[in-house]
Length: 407
Image 1 (cartoon, rainbow, N blue to C red):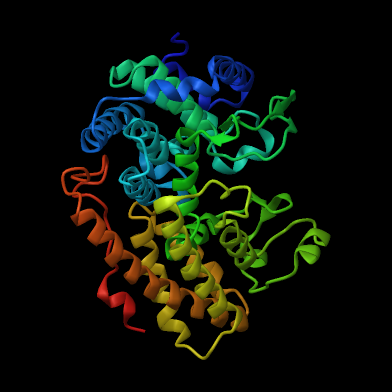
Image 2 (cartoon, rainbow, N blue to C red):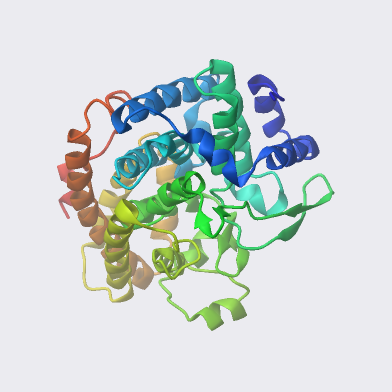
């Protein structure tokens, strides 16, 4: 049941006035989804063949979606650096022995492309939309997959559902949308008979892995180049550089009393806390996901500790090194964005600068350890990870330049 074409979607997604039509399109997808749809993902392919097919489909779909788009137009926190790490993490999870080969396709397509909608609409406009970046990515990938002929219609619906559901809503909400219409946003069903639908959870796992560890510090910092509405433990709040870069770690009660506004340090702690089977976001974690999330969580908590308990550092050299390092995290970073961030950082009080310099230094050091581990994994799967679509030669900036460490 094909509906809107890819070209039509590209035009509509960028138009706030089209919210109603797009919202109805998502309701149609909801009506087609059943918990047993994942059964259509069953395949006779072995794991390696399933991965090869998924990577071929990924390249074809991304090529169609990116046609006519400049990847630098998206926000700095959701560029090709982020996508390539998502691709690596989805491949890592796809090689987990527990995973049925039939789940490789939604895992890799959903895991890698779940944020591609940010190229067409503002990621941080979600507060005033019911059709958000996740839904945009879902419909774009579905349409591109069908038009390229690389996936079947049931597979397209499953992948679209998995991508839309990566924004993990815990409860229903009502949104006053930009077009003046009030709409409801509902959680996406992700279990059947008390068991997780892993086709849905895999993109969420991939998403969470780039929200932790040393890469997360640089990636989240990049989003602070301009004020925006972010989502915290107590709902949306306006993130302003000078406010969120205060090195504060308050209690949950204090944050709630302040209207839910979080500092960057508290935002990092919030994500570290979610990396657990006790969390509603991590309750179905298993296998390779548990190993990787625990490793990243320990790294992130170590970085947080260095900010919270700063020592004397060479502030000038670390500031320059960090600005350079940001292009390792996001190779498509615009120079003016890096310059804006450095200028804003230098306007902080010296105490805040010193605290974050300790964290930046630790994040860069932890990144080198991360890079070595990821390189080892990629070398074990050269055929699967030959070349990430859009990044010639694979992942750019996997290993930080040695000069970054000269502080």
